[in-house]
Image (tube, rainbow, N blue to C red):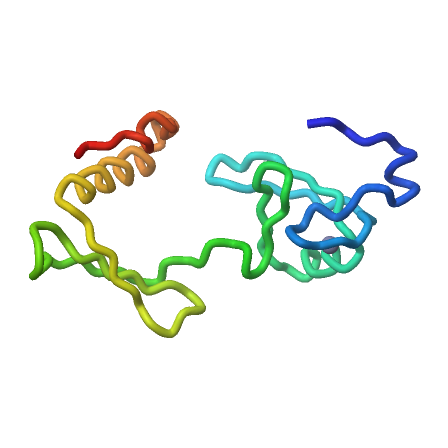
Length: 138
Ligand SMILES: [Zn+2]
């Protein structure tokens, strides 16, 4: 990451990093994210600084700031049941902000991969590698 110069900050040459925002940056916001509490900072416009100061969640994704509807919705509840049309499972997800739950079909292999991923991610030992996520078991 290239750190801008003081002159760039003063002249407002840097755009706000919030997705689709075209305002010039005006102030720093700092915080932490992730379960390991990684440090993050961003140079956002006055409008987004006010939104963040008011308590809105925000995340740093590469070089963009995600806020509001750009943040993936929180899972409120889920249910899984054996599928009646094929060997596998129907996973029903209900997420925050959506009135209707939606269903996804998982093959037994996909269900196992998902279970292994969740086990690994929740064990706080090794970080989940991309190799693992890219692994196709069928
Ligand atoms: Zn902005």
